[in-house]
Amino acid sequence: MSRIPPVEDSNFWPAGAEGESHQHQTQAFATMQELFRVMAHRPEVARQTMQLLQTVMRSGSVEPRLKELLAIRVSQVNYCHY
Image (cartoon, rainbow, N blue to C red):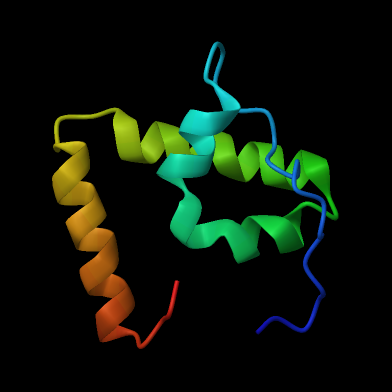
């Protein structure tokens, strides 16, 4: 539970990459909904964070699936629930 209350609006997702659907964003980052709901208090921060995550997780020479597994393992090692 965060110290800052999350935005309750069901349409809180920031605009993503060009042409990316709201549904795709919701599925891709569903495990971090509360984090983005807190960031939704500052839409410009949420938008930039979403773009950074998309760039890091989708581009480069490492497979996106391996990046996801690495993120999960790093979270486990650090006792992070996100």
